[in-house]
Image (cartoon, rainbow, N blue to C red; front, side):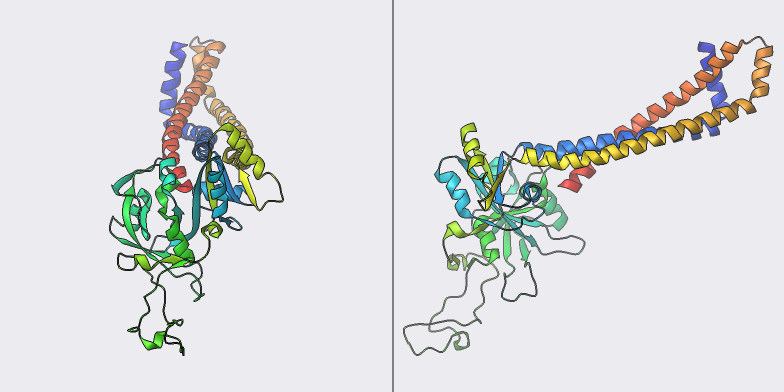
Length: 399
């Protein structure tokens, strides 16, 4: 067999154009299903890891998948909001830690960069996700914010710069006003959706929502054009000309205030870390009834449902890959058959020199083996390189 391999290699090298064409065709046929399989497995690991680290999520009743994607990746806005009372009930009953999230707004888009999500939350979120500032510090005052590493890089911002939120409806003059926030820190890279978000205090998110605001103080020196006509000299009433502040700084921070009960203020989702297994069961049971307006989901179960759809796509790709392999095998057989006919005189010469028919068969099998080995090795190398590139691409696509 050693001599057959030597003759096979020399024969393939002599016809290297044909040999390279066969090797690359087979390598691509093997590489495609291999890459799809590795990419889907990488996608599964990336999307499932964050869900596995999040015990429970509270949100408005509706699509479970939309709620999970919103709370985990700040995408797919939930149909409606819940209130701060849901978070307070978990804390007051000592069932665990409730981390409120408010993510309905985005930053002002810039040339080449779309707006990134603005997430209002509390300091417990940074502890829960192990987010540590690489520069500066976490937001502590109203109007402060901290950027994820990828967000800071894309926007080209640093600590001390200003960031402007975008109103949900630019044509609604009576709606929310854009708020200019101060960047107090840049987070360390975490290879998660947190790298592409802006985090601020939950109260700042409510200011952007329009629940809280600050405006200039009214007194006797105020421009009369900003006041309503009032016969009472003991009361000063402003008209609509007194606009709320669009920036929170040291001079006007004390003027910001909220109207209403904090328990009624809106949240888009709540991350819940149960104090115990018993507390987890109690929370699930509390929101299991369809009559409640709030639902509690377990992210791993919801993401598993989402991944089941992905696996259906994988099955389709697998069937297509099998068909492609069969077609390639048929083409390879056709090429070898034509090659045998073209090399009939060569095989006849070898037979006359004393080579048995078994030796000639070994020579043909050796050529096929060399081609398959070269194609498989090339496919493995290409698959390894592609998997490394796909890991970063999938992470950027998801996060």
